[in-house]
Length: 356
Ligand SMILES: [Zn+2]
Ligand SMILES: [Zn+2]
Image (cartoon, rainbow, N blue to C red; front, top):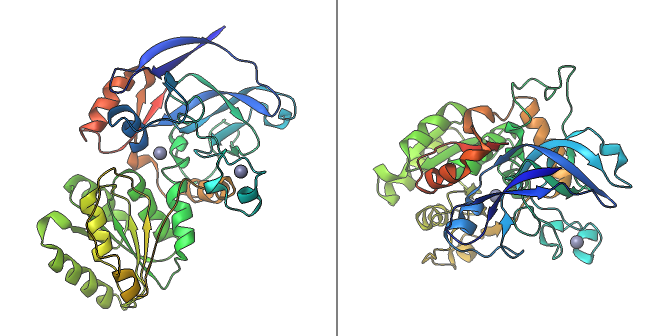
């Protein structure tokens, strides 16, 4: 018996379809039949930009995985036949930082498609201890108000949960204004999460399609490409005042993963503001870091999301308070090289989900 996986063999070389013998789960492990695996900017970074994976090549990429457990190792029997989401970052749970609740920085964490084999495959072997169960209804569909498939729910791992933790850590509440720079992928979900937390939400992008897609879900959108930065800042400020919100302490979220977006995000800092960085780029920016001091502001990043936040992030989606379906597009896994190429050239506006 074998399963199919698409392996990265060399930077920039098409992924290769390979047949791998189906492994038997060891102690505390489960074998999943993959339902869907989201394509993330990070996968493209490994593939096109030569960002090094922690595990040597060849490696199967993909870290936004949902699926159904088809075999269990000893100690993981309770996961038999369960529908699950695999956290994109799985802390060990046992080291010094993990015991202090800081699993995001666990040095022996496991990330599929980086530390271990990833989800662009028909099956995957994963540790069971931190899986997030997806409740199913009588028809075997994800239970809840949202019209969504298990495959589409794969984007919870990372695209929804990483922003979720950053929103939680920003301390965002109903009195606050949240400003999002970058509305594609992760940004689109995060803006909706902020809305679900009751905040006034402003989105900024330079891509008209992304702006149009996001507009119905948040309070105000701005096209940064249409005005000089100073005008943009004034317009954001005017909108906040108009809404009767505080002129201080904006929660600014950088989700574009571009140098231009990072400059915009930093430039929007105001008194007591917080800047949350999730988007990644290898590019550098030229900023006056002392503004943090002058504004008594804070800046922080977050790497992945703690597995304990997954059930509440999943609930927002199943309750239909954060809509996933309008922002994802499913493709047959066999089209992965084409999807990588199109995503790289920004020809796919939604989050692609590969379905084996
Ligand atoms: Zn990712
Ligand atoms: Zn640890």
